[in-house]
Amino acid sequence: MAYDPGAIDASLAAALGEDSVLIAELRAAFVESAARACAGLQAAEDAPGWRAAALRLKGLAASFGAVRLMAIASEAAEAEPHDPRITDRVVRAVARL
Image (tube, rainbow, N blue to C red):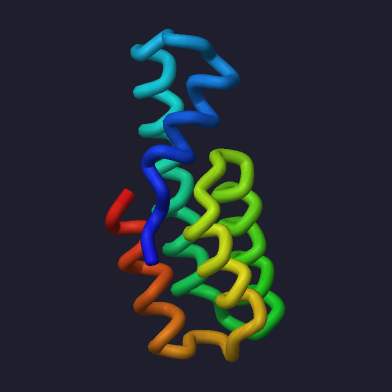
């Protein structure tokens, strides 16, 4: 699973109109924020930290209409901390942004 570029673009266009420069800036900010959230997930020291980081990523994904990334982050929030299967899925999804 990855993000849905059409959904993100549609969300940004709905909010901003056709301002392609601003859309590009916000997309870049989204990608940077998602990478930081992913790093926070990987650095979590305990279950509450893991869950909090996963929920931050889920919220970020939701605010940009990245439904698939939101679903993966939701799974991560319920998973055991540092489960390699879910961690890999999160990392791959964010890397595809």
